[in-house]
Length: 358
Image 1 (cartoon, rainbow, N blue to C red):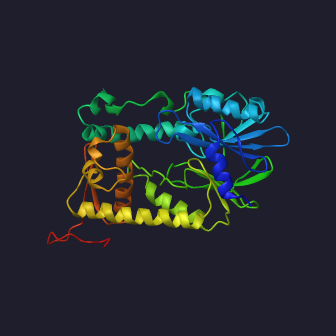
Image 2: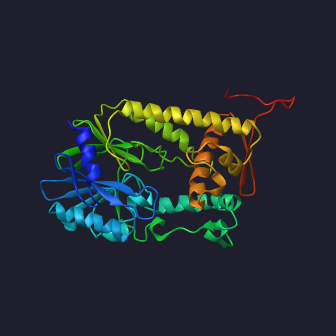
């Protein structure tokens, strides 16, 4: 049994690239995320008796992230020639460093056939969020956008871009087993935060490597940019899927390890129930486009108009995910004009709003 308070103290005191022992042959390694609000990602190093090291998630495509991984391997007496990688999902803070660390022949396990899937999704999403960002941007923020024949685009720093190299993946799916050192993990598909998200469940030792699906303090971002993917519905189903697993310890990608899986899942379910009610009421009050609804919604920080453009981007993606959920539930109606989405209440023949989700 892990002493969670003692582990918490050791994690808080650890420097970047300094392995923190969690369980037998399993270490948490803090990897820096420079110039990013998250600041840190937790990689997990699992040591096999045959010299193989499994690394779960690898950080940004950034020299500081690469240096932290090198420091951890050296500290553990391991080298890159017997490393295998497991990715919990496709986001660049979990995958980007592959451009720096991947060697030919290095096994990479993911719920992806290839990163072409990610690029295809991004191409579809750009057609929606580019015009929305232009609508949300102040005059000063428009300088952070690129204008092409395909429409406006947000400037993205290099570490946030898709991979330049494309390692061969071993595709893993729901129920597959992964042998990593002394542990046998069950792959659990948990789409929502990312369409290809997985968690790793060690049933006999009762712990869960949760990626970004369930975090200790942060509410995971759930965004959707087009109605074909009901991201919030997928996320809520994924929360319920893991809620009742016998788990004594959760090892997240951000924040510190924690206990209390049921309580945390219930908190997240209630958070999104309240958020859906708020978004529904904003539509009923006459806010009919994503920018207006996002601007008037309740956020942790006030004065939405003054937010950095990339934070507006994430907030509008979350708003749209909740709107798509409400549309698919039949609570509100959606219209499309060019690249823009509009939302309104269903009306009866007397032009009276139907309060379907009250």
